[in-house]
Length: 493
Image (cartoon, rainbow, N blue to C red):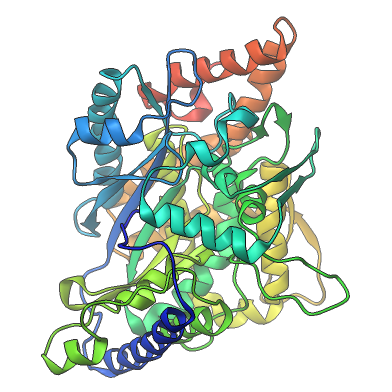
């Protein structure tokens, strides 16, 4: 999302030419995947962390460009709205204590950025959705002044043709219309990148899809918007609806949303997932690279597949396939459903559980997937986002006969030993695995996610404060505890 482009208006020829490039990219990717040894190498973990900038009163501070200049940090990038920034954290091999190393990188980065923001009266907070947001914080005035964002906004508005409609149920339902896509910027996430060998890609991708609802419920941290108590992870419906260009008719066929859980289980590998995105979703930013994939291959270089990567960046699957030409070319899975915050240790624990559970369950997929049609996995995803640790899921069993709902907490409890075995299987030291999964066990025992803590704290504050004062007091309490890196299960209420 942060890569800059050189123009904002496009012709029909631009789109036709770009589509031809996508076809060439797919052909090059197919050739690469057929090469013996392509994409092999040590596994690794990387991450991106999106953040809010707030002022002394806790309102969004429109200063990301200015703070970026002060920070002078190449790993820091701009986001769509002027009060958001993103860190591209360094990747760590699985032999480098990747979870502990990522936690340290997050803490060090936030400390540096906090100092830079303070010079402009700003504070940094990683939280799924800022509780102090106002409707006046959205609109064309808050878009970061970069050609990429202006072009993206223009393309999505043109394809929608009228207002974007927000309709989210919950204890205090929210309905509203927006003339642009800036509500997308209300969502900040912790996006985890996991390098995967091509021959293990389909099974690993499917395992991550299956386990994502569990990690999402554990990590939920976005229970409110504009003071409305909504889903435990309100980012999930808000992101989808805020950029949905479709006009869905329940009695006709409808194209898939650009924000989705996917279209089905992966059957063969990464190529089909990339091809699916090209076949289903029309391009938004038709910008061609200076050299073609065929030219790069002919020159003996690993092709950048720049057009395919650009197109992928405008289709926001919650688990997304990633191609990277670095290190001889490799594949990753990007896990996008986890929210930012509350703390570095909580975010990393969520990632450790998700990856460990996926790796631990992967050998059993052949017997489990026939017991859970993809639409039921998608159902689990949305129910976990809506109800968090109170959700009930349709969970597969190898010897089942028919469906039955189960409490998500019971499923998580059974999956923690699976996650521990999975982390050991990929070479994570037992002490590192035990530490982060211990944080998950503690959270599960108390039934407390970041969302639950926010809900309970806000309920307390509302007893003695006005609504706006309660929301600000909630944020201040959150920002008091988050820098301590104390796991959310240990925060006082």
